[in-house]
Length: 136
Image (cartoon, rainbow, N blue to C red; front, top):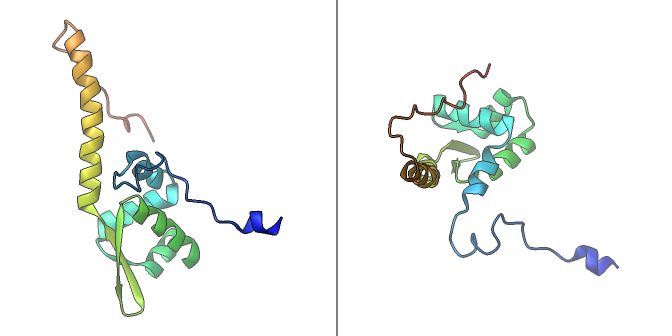
């Protein structure tokens, strides 16, 4: 019985085999952002540029191990990049990867919008309201 418990399982993937084949699944990117602490990390990095992990942990009021866990999730989601400087680890937004993933997402949205426009006889539709509108 111990052997079956001790056997390691392959990591969960949003689309089996896609990540292993080098294809990045957008759901992994958005899953990385689906946490208030991780969104706070992104906001801090957007304002400050490069920040030490210990400073991020202090600003977000989480322990160092918990911050490392959040950063690992954000690295896997291609949102942040880290670099080591002596004993310190510094984090920054991976803007190139974010831009690439954002363009992929916009392309997905654009495909649906193009299909709706092609089927619609009206050409002067008002653009949809921003998602954040009306949110406190």
